[in-house]
Length: 211
Ligand code: 5GP
Image (cartoon, rainbow, N blue to C red; front, side, top):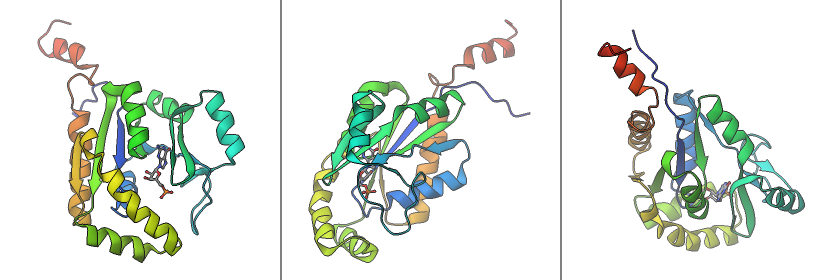
């Protein structure tokens, strides 16, 4: 019989420069594992074609965003490429309470803020592209943004990459299937972390007959 030992939920952060495959990897992880839910960020940027409000992001006005900042409603928030992005606290707290792990697709600034708030249960993963050339190719191929935006993102990529050492795990995404397996392995291993398994003491006591 498999036993579910009680444990605290973990907060899995994925960061990378745009074009390193982070969105694909988070989608694959969410499809594969039903015990982790995505934290849907709030942003002031305009939706790209195909993006759905409430699914990819909650798209809001600057006024709405600032209001939530004033109400202290964000776990973290930051300005990225001239737009505001933030993680609303309430849905994350709800998911954790319901026993789910939570996945975050946020930048290094948000990761730093989360590290200060919830250090213990945070698992930080940085995705690197295999090369600068491949990163440029992926950004161009995506071509949902204007050439000007792509160029700006390319120059921002090295800035984002320079924060790689603030993360616990680094995945080089040169093969999507391999990167997916590595990400899943990190999640599985972190779920077995001793300190996070709050039910272990009573579980062990039962095994050795002290309860
Ligand atoms: P994009 O506009 O391409 O969807 O996202 C741009 C960058 O903003 C990405 O690096 C993404 O991880 C980051 N981002 C998305 N949501 C959040 C958030 O809630 N907080 C922070 N700090 N960054 C975010």
